[in-house]
Image (tube, rainbow, N blue to C red; front, side, top):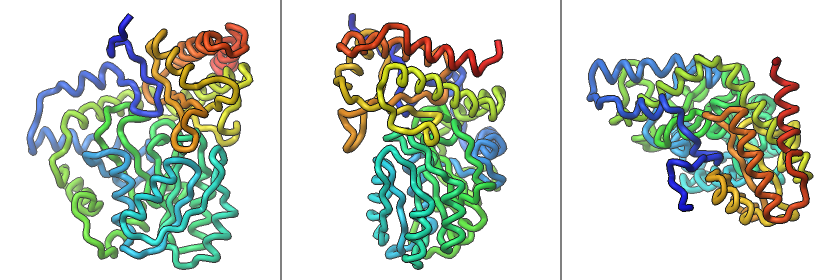
Amino acid sequence: MKMSLDHLVLRFPGPTPLPPSVERAMTLPMVARGPEMTEAIVSLSPKLKPIFGTKQEVAVMSGSGTASMETAIVNVTNSGDEVLVLVTGRFGELYASMCEAHLLHVHVLETEWGEAADPEAVKDYLKSHPNIKAVFATFCETSTGVINPMKDLAAVVHEYSDAVFIADGVSSVGGIAGNMDEWDIDILGTGSQKAMMTPPGLGFVAFSERAQEVAKQVTRGRFFFDYNKYIEQLAEGQSPFTPAVPLLNSLNASLDLMHEEGIENVFARHRLLSDMTRAAFKQWNIPLTASDETASPTITGAKADDFDVEELLAVVKKDFHIAIAGGLGKMAGKMLRIGHMGYCSPADALQYISALEIGLVRIGKKINLGEGIQAAQEVFLSTKKV
């Protein structure tokens, strides 16, 4: 049977499925600059701040998570500045490439894929490189499902350097508690299409007071990504450039859903989904790419040591219309990645775990039907009071 896109279930690390109310919000009438657009823009800030864990304004731009991260680069560095990028996977590598494209002197501190960045190693590096102006790290490394210790990294950066600390929160913000102010993160950015359960096309970024002061002193040219423009216009209830109005409407709807659920409950749900998924893989004796201590609540990565991962993903997509991601970069063909973020519930986890279990049997992996599901069910029952 030919698959209809109406039946396709995305369990990628992004983009992610959309709640029906978010989809409907995109069909609201178009508005131009004026009271209606001001209302849409102004209503976003108080809803975004608790998710970022900040009292600072959160700039919303037409773009993507990459746009938010490039905004960080161009507002706190000048060409030739020394910067340090903590690389723990494919997206750390991409961040280093972005910095190189902006003619920065890029230092890379690389960690084995599947492991988190080591604050002690960062301390030693900063002590021997005193001219570093900015340190970049991925909060959740999407290619491995590893969470980096952002609070500890920020503390080391500020104790042993004058650098600003910048966090790529693209696959974490909205699904993982990220206390920007409490942890002393200077810039936190993300995109709309992951845990924020909004269509692709929006970038969000918040600057600490320290980063705002640096942004005022930077002399490089910048225009669309000029953070100062966004904050100045936000104070007037406007955007410096034409906003993506349907996406703003959908974002407002998704934020309403998150606050209705309760932000702490949103974070707890993501952790439960991760625990259920990891329990199944452990029962199947399939190695996970992240330890229990560093595992992301939004993404689970698993290694394909004794089966063909591409065959498994093809079977699950063909038979159940569930799309699960493979590996990236040097892990291509060696692992799978499940996105359980945003519009995803324990019922959805039981669905993709069951489909994976059947798929594993079909491709010849020696497991017992039902054991992964049972492991996930037991996690649910031990977590939820019934």
